[in-house]
Image (tube, rainbow, N blue to C red):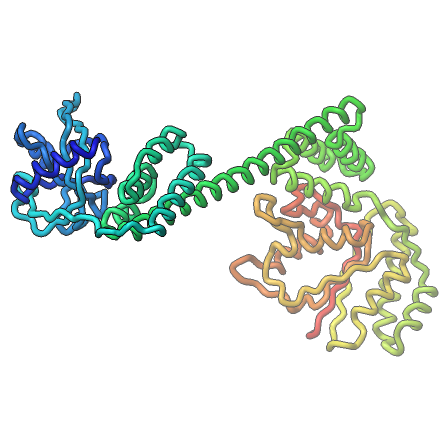
Length: 490
């Protein structure tokens, strides 16, 4: 708009009353000399547009403090707005309207005079505070143009045409208004510039907003670049791994196949019972179909490791020689003649049974050493194992209250493991160690079960040849294990 047209507009307005209709806008701040389209859908706004006289289409456009309010009250509107002229009105298909409005001047709302059918208020036109020809102001205006040029280089919604628009504006006050109006910044920041009447401060605020917008865009680009680089790196690594897998498959060195072959060989080398081997091979087939990145793969692999590392067929050879056993007991312990005599009787009977039926199962009573702590109960068990040439393992049952400590956890639980019996058999490395159950009288029970009842299957010769751990879910033969118990009270 030329200066002459602007002057004619101002003179026309001065002749009219200072009371104007108020048009609230949700998320828009209109600056003087700015031309924008506005959507009109609210009842009050539609009535305002429909009742505008043809000879004076002037309204005051005011931004809402909260754009989500459907029917704003006067206190929901900013006190500063823009006097505007409605240039053209369009009817929309949904009975709403769209209008082209042009800002004319800053105004301050003094008081609301009417609220129905739409708001009408008394306003005061606010002129810019007069500034003398100030070299500093001119320098700030040039700086504003420079910063705007820099913004155009990084802002995706601005082009070189906008630079041309600013280069034609000579007044610093209008320059600041136009620069801020082109930005997609929050309404409060635009409103702050609209309410600033000091030209120097307005230009300064405009420069700060432009600089902040440049920093925001650059930071967003840096973050986007980092994310893109990270994704590109991940994709590159993925493709390289896939290429490595393809090359290894061509060479017959595929790691997954090699790993599965190793597990299959371990299953065969373990010499499991037929039922256990069938379960292991079925799990191996399932493992081959699970992606290695899946958590289920680790669960299945751990289960197979337990099956293959148990001593299904590894047995240490017994060498029961009663005189040698007596010598070992005397070397390890002084006194305890009655205890040693009972142990030697027990070993002599086992030696006799082995001599008569070398391949048969040896069933006999379970030794239980009772006495106060520190008298040598555990060390006697270790001496018995040494005299028989067997491995020795010991578990302490003091304070055990959970049945799962004996029988293990179901594999459905995260972090499930076999019970202590199976764990220590794996540790022993043979299926016939001397297994000491220390402090058996200290077993407890609570809501998690009764571990003493679970021990029945472990110690009963009629049942322990098919001991079933909840984790393994296959039978394990404990009949070759020599169990010894200790207690502190008789």
